[in-house]
Length: 114
Image 1 (spheres, helix red, strand yellow):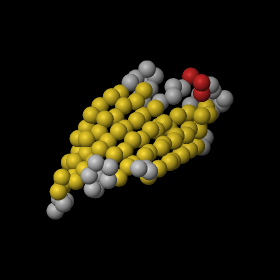
Image 2: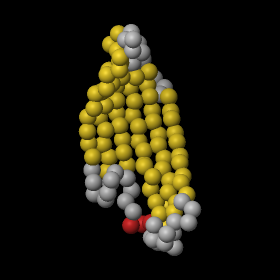
Image 3: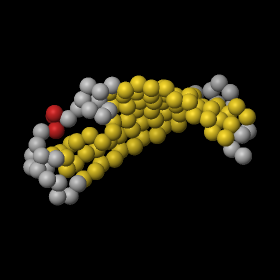
């Protein structure tokens, strides 16, 4: 089973940023999705991303003090019938909002189409 692969890279530059603040940042993501693994029309996926992270400080500040955030998600989506899809997921990450801040959670999404 060969997955679909999604890859992304983003960069942001702030013009005229005050000294000591971030003036450049970047982020990346990679996602893998497998279709029709357990039953027809289902999807299993996993994704990893590093949200925007400072790569340059205005005035020459040190970006080594900035944490390395990493977020991840694993999900399974299946069509219960022609009108309803259920998607449970587990997600987590480290240093996502501030250094030494770990996050883990579970979510279930149900979509109805009429």
